[in-house]
Image (cartoon, rainbow, N blue to C red; front, side, top):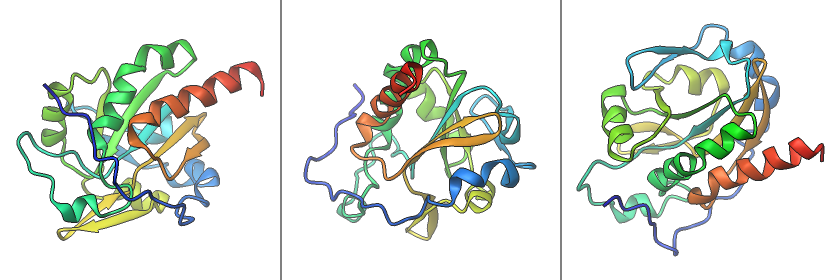
Length: 191
């Protein structure tokens, strides 16, 4: 059984302004950004013309990995598997509301992500930003942990090569897809 729970005592992230610049950056910053997928393809982020949801997360734990208190103490760090599972569970509903694709993005390598995709049965690809090209082009907010740069949890709605909505910070992580659904429903109603 996959544990998608997380402690209720986690510190809540606050908006540090790390994503205010994004809504105008995508059309210009992503002209040459391609990220490898868990199916050994590459996705050219500048070609995302249909409505796409891209959720970024710091890292998923390995099977049997003990989550250290140090990780739990970082606001917004814990909850990557629950976030991914929220998109898995609402995937068909997102499609019914016009989402053409959903992708998860982290700085973990594609081989690691492939194991996660299989283990938690994700119906969408995970993209590896192991070389931080996407993070740097978009100037995404990061966490430094155990000598690694990790992308903070955020979600982007992209359409016609442009970010049209940003969710940041994302908390609680298991409600990430529900927040996107709420926005899509309001958008469909024209509100």
